[in-house]
Image 1 (tube, rainbow, N blue to C red):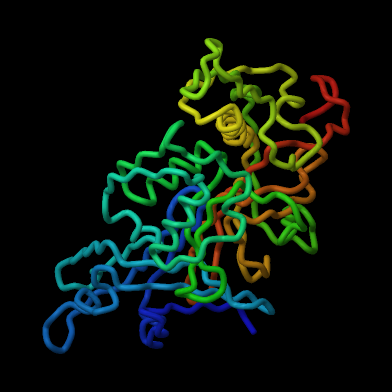
Image 2: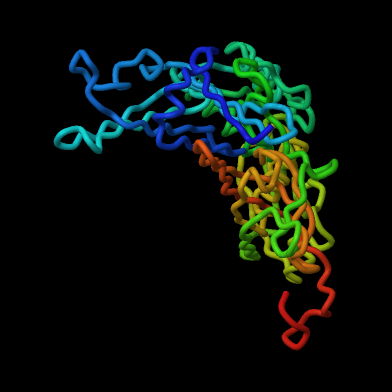
Length: 375
């Protein structure tokens, strides 16, 4: 079976005429931003004199849209499940080149509709996340309470919410070194809420090959590294629960994430870069968690961008998975974390523009230095 995709509106498949008329469909999936879609449609005059598509029920505010993609020989995957939030209409004289762009975000937008003032007490950040996901009928992932914060207690620090639910979760995720997102895996309407540190273990979902004459599956790769970021954190905090004038320490020299190569940022850079963290924390453990979160974010010092066609790769790239890059030399070959994927889908093609990140590089087989070749 060839590569294919399916559009669903409120759980029902779109009519065949929509596929033949649509100009393009783009879906973006990311680990740190909401998923989004944009559908481009031609506009003409209907038999009643109205404009086509503009007033269709599928494209009205909060119309549910899902996109399911199937690679050849693979099970279908739901890469988007969300709601229509915007229309952009362009009309030209005679309506010959008129267009309608329909845009929306994933189901996490429903968690952004109300700013709340709420005090959370005697709960951890993971429990807060699971409670909020449950309020929207979203199934919390089983790993959400791993690597959790200390409980926010009455005699220490309660957690005050003065924002929307999704904004609260993203704030908590940043200070825990986690990622907060909502996604569907296989079935539209079955949504999972993630509040987790990146999972970097396990086998890669696919191997990306750019310079194999026979078996290449990626058209281009661009890799860059940047060492201008902290490698260690000094953290001190006075607490309500102790009279020690020096407070507690939460210093950190590593993030705790699995390194995706032989040399992490500290080893590769060869010099330490220290940051001082000033924040409110419940105890020493919570302070150390914040320090590790800072190093988790700064540790992604390698970035790889590329483009592939689904018919050649034969695998749908998904944000939040691990892939292997091969044939890029001893330094840049190895496992990478998929940060972002932009799918551009047409009747006869499905292209994926992706961003990969890495918190380490491989060994320099040439020996390094200016005389040892390129890194």
